[in-house]
Image 1 (spheres, rainbow, N blue to C red):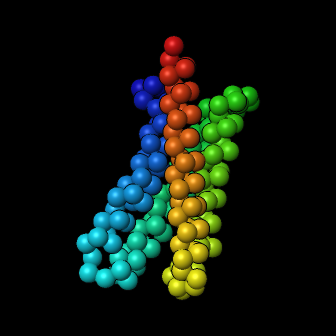
Image 2: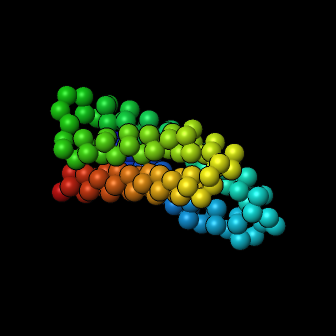
Amino acid sequence: MKSMLSAWPVWIAAFWWGSLTTVGFYVVPMLFAHLPTPALAGNMAAKLFAAQTWVALVCGLLLLMNGRQNQPSAQTEQSRVAIIFIVSGMLLALLSEFAVAPRIIARENLRLWHSIGTLLYALQWGCAGVVFQKLMTGRSGSAR
């Protein structure tokens, strides 16, 4: 039972990274390929990206809370690096949702803001991937 509980951070990180991958690289392109108009696809994509922001925040908070419980006094270098990427990913999600998305929805300099939004999403995806990798490396290293 204890090993199952200790695996939860890995599952949370996997869910965060996997949901970013699925929404950004599969579902949203499918919307634009199959819905009748780009406007309809864009509106649905905006809702999915907003939901993804909440997934990122919940996953990030759960990972941060777990790190505090498991390492109350001394943190390893691996976990400190993971915390930096967790917080960065969360901040990127918030920035995308509250600074970039409103400008895209308002169709304000669409090419610029869409490019910035794509960059922020890709960076968040990278942060979640690093967190997942660090947690996997930490688990395999502690299992030996």
